[in-house]
Length: 411
Image (cartoon, helix red, strand yellow):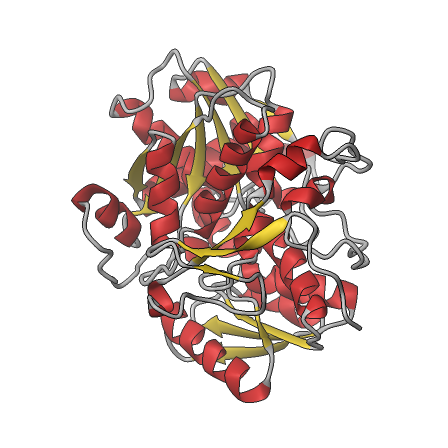
């Protein structure tokens, strides 16, 4: 079936050379090669003047309320799973502990497969159907894979997932329960990424890998659109995001910029990008002012353990555009953040999910963020996705006999 083009999409534009292309099934710029990431362009004037705008008169409380700002054909039936419009919590005890006036947590672990990546995969499966594919694939350290498997199951696509050797078992189990074909690559994420691309070319699968697919970032930006709408009366000074491939913070930044362009907010919060000390190539490029140099990775935060990020330019562009900063955190600081966000904020995040909270704490200590400012941290994934790391962050279980005396002896 032939579907009409998304109503307000005008094309694709290279982030390096600005060459423009039609919004078809392509990935990177012909002139700039694999580094030439493409950005979806919209007719914002038409969106602003649209008398039937669903952005201003939404019919749903999920991320499809922003369909005018998504590259999805208006005639495509949407997945039945509830993606987006995740809750934002005011967490005063956690704010007091880390030393900031006001702190909010946006819990994206509430998405269908328990991570932020459902936003991207929901758009990815729609584009696969729109372009006539029955099979879809991606390379992932875990969450993108889980989300693709879940969303593919929801719409009836066959999914193929390439994961690096270090992917946590709970995430692999999620893939298998959704019916995905899982290929565990005896190598790094970068090797899994390259192999996935080769397999897509060979077997004719749609490539959902967000590092190069221009449409996936559009799903991720819905978190930025939501933050602007949910927080418009109490817009934070900072939005804090963990950074791996660069797509997530790049997408959130784009969403915030679009909401300012459309008049929903009058300013864009500063972005604080947080990388693990064991996987910080974007941080290095941000402060060196030079092109990114790939690096090895060594961190418990598997979802952001990316040594060759494809979307680093978009990430740096959005952080600079917001007048924000970047920072790195150790695995020990990440484990501490797992404890603090759970015990003082009531949100259980996986290591990459809470890296932003660790980064905010450190940024306050370094004076990057001021105590009298406010911040919103995006918790990108649920802690049950990496139980082994959670065990490292917690105390021991108290074993007792089935009598009160045994309990008394423990206290």
